[in-house]
Length: 449
Ligand SMILES: *Cc1c(COP(=O)(O)O)cnc(C)c1O
Image 1: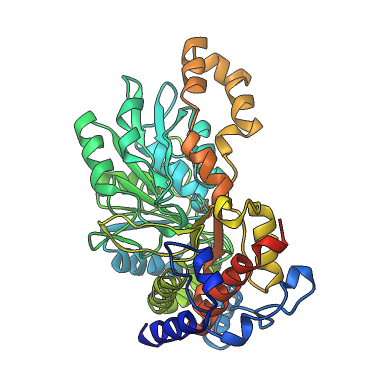
Image 2: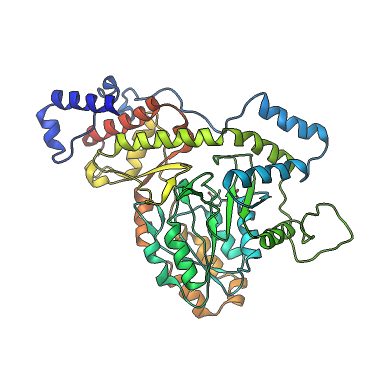
C-alpha cells in the first residue's frame, strides 16, 4: 500500500498537466510497473502488459490427490460408502453445520432441498435473475414459478429492498444466491422470510467459506446448497452438497436422494421405500478428490481475499471502473469471480465488448458474465409448456410474466466485467498487471473508439 502511494505521488509530479486535467476531479492512479505504461495497446499491435499465464484451474497435488483417487479405485468400492461419509462429516465441520448430505451436483442439491421442504406445484419462489441457469431450472423443475427480484447493481446480489413487493399468498420460499461468491444480505432476507413465514434455501453454489457476520453462507437459511463442479473453488468434476441443522429434514434429504429408502441405508434391504425418491448419490471418487481439495481451501480463500482487496485498491480510482461493494455484514467473500462494473461513458463511449477484447489482448483473461436469463427463450417456453398450462391458470402464468422485469439487472448484465477466481491465486504483481492493463486501456481509450 505504502509503496503504491509513493509511486503514485511520483507519477503525479512527473505526469503532464494535460494528463491530470483530463481526469479533472479524480487523480488517475499510477502504474505499478512504469515501463508497462508506455506503448501501443496490444489490440492495436503493441506489446501486451502481460505475457505470462495466470494460475490454471483445477489444481491438484500429484502425490496426495492422485493417491487418494487410486486408493478408491483399488478398493473396488466406488459407489457411496465410507469416503463420502467422511467428506460429509468434514465439510459439515468446516462450514459449522450440524449435517451435510453429499449429492451428484449442485443442481440436485437444490432440487432435493426444494422437494424435501415441500416447494412444489402452486408455489412461487423469489429468486434473483443474476445467477447461473440451474437456480431457475430447479424452481421450474419443482413445478413452482420463479418470481424475479431485481438485482442490487452495487453488490450484484438480490436487492433486499425489492423482495417484499413480490410476496403474495402463493409465495413459499426465497432462494437467495450468493452469486460470484459474494454474500447476499442475509439479515434482510431472513427478517423478511420470518415476517412472511417463508422458507429460505440458499444457493451457495459459488460461496464455499464465504461468511455473513462470521457464519458461513449456506448455513443461514433452512437449507444451503453447494456445487463442486470442475470450475468451482472446491472442485471434483461434478459434485454437490446440502447443509442443514434439522435432523428430520436432513434424514428426508438422504432418503429422497437414495430412492426413498430410509435414512442411512445404501444397499437394498427389506425395509422398503418410505417415500418417493430419486437417486443422486455422490461416488467415492468424488469424495476422495474433495477431501484432498479441502486441505487447500482455507489458504486459497485467504489468498483470493487478499488479492481481491489489493486489486480493488488499485482500480477503484480509474474513471469508469466501479468495483463491487460488499454488504456491511459480509465478513468474508469466496470470490468465485471478481466483478466490477464498466461505465463506457468514462471511456469516451468505448463499448464493453471492445474493452474486454482490449483487456484480453493485454494478456488478462476476463468476461462480461451473465446475460439476463429471465429474458432467455426457455423462460417463456416453460410457461407455455403443456405441464405448466395444466398446473397453473392463465392469470397465474401472466402474473409470473408481469413480474419478470428487472431493469437494474438488465443494465448490470451490460456493464459487468469478471475475472475468474484462479487469477486471484497468484501474487500482488499479478494484480498489478491487471490494474496496469486497465489503466493502459483507459489512457489510450481515444485510439479505440
Ligand atoms: C454451479 C452452480 C449451480 C449448479 O451446480 P452444478 O454442480 O453445476 O449442478 C447452481 N447455482 C449456481 C449459482 C452455480 O454457480
